[in-house]
Image (cartoon, rainbow, N blue to C red):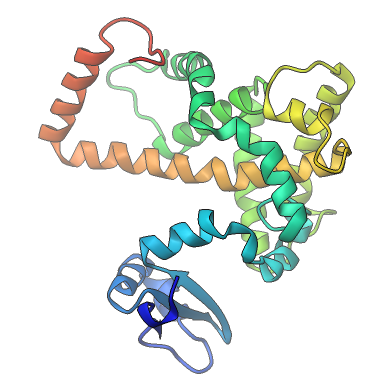
Amino acid sequence: MESTQTVLSVAAGRDPVVGHLPQLGSDPLPFLRSLRDQGDVVTIYFGTEPMHVVVDPRLAADVLVGRYGAFNRDAFAAASAQFVGQSVAVISGASHQGRRQLMAPYFQRARIGHYVDEMARIALARTGGWCDGDVLALDDEAFGLALATAGGCLFGTDIAQETIEDIHVQLMAALGEVGNGVADRTTGGTAEIRRIITDVVARRRAEGIDRGDLLSAFLLHPDQAGAVFTDEQAVDEVVGLLAAGVDTPAVALSWVFHELSCHPEVERRACEEIDAVVGDGPVTEDR
C-alpha cells in the first residue's frame, strides 16, 4: 500500500459538533453510498469521534487479510468490553493472531462441505412447516435460521425455538446498549445474552465430548500458548461470533427475498435454477 496512491478525505457535510450523526440518523444508506465517490479512505465523525471507512476494495483486503495484525481495535474493545469481553473480534496483536489461528480451520473453504448436511437439515426443519398463503415475519424467520445454523454448525448445539427468540430479543437489546455506551454485564440485554451463552458453554464443558466443532476447540484444544479457554473466554468468543455472524446474514437473506419479490422475472429464473440444480433431492456439497 503506497500513500501516494491513496486518497484520504473527510466526508462532506460534517458539523463541527455532531459530525455526521444527522446523515447517519435520518437516511444512512445514501450517505454511506456517497462515500465511494469521496476517496479511498473516508473519515466520518460520530460527534467529535472519527471513524475511518475503507472504501477501496484493494485497501480493504489489505486491512482484513494482508496486514490484519497491524491494526488495533482498542477503541472498540473498550466500548464493547462488557458485551464481548476479550473476543477475537476486538482484541489486537499476538492475542488476536493466536485466537484467529485456532479458529481459522473451521472457516476454511474445505470445511464448508462438512457443514452442508447440517445446514440443509436445519433449513428443512425451519421451513418445512411453511405453507402457501402463510404470512411470516421474514426478518424473524431469517434470524432464527441464521442462529440455528450457527448453533448447529459451529457450536454443535440444537437451539430450541424459544431460546432462539430470546437470543434475538436480547442480542438486539445488547447491541443497542453497546451503541449507546451503557452495556453492563449485570443488567439488560448484555447480561441476558451472556447468561444464555454461559449456560450453553457450561453444558458442553460438563459433557466433555469433542464434537469437532468450534466450541469443542475453545473448550478442549490448547491455543498457541498451550492453554485451554476458560468458560468466560469461550462465552466471549461465542457472543462475539453471534453478534458478527448471525444478524448480518439474517439481514442479507431478508433483503434477498425482498428483492426477489420486487422482481418476479428474477425470482422465476432463480426458482428454475434451483429446480434444475437441486431438483427434489437434498441439498449436498455438490449441488
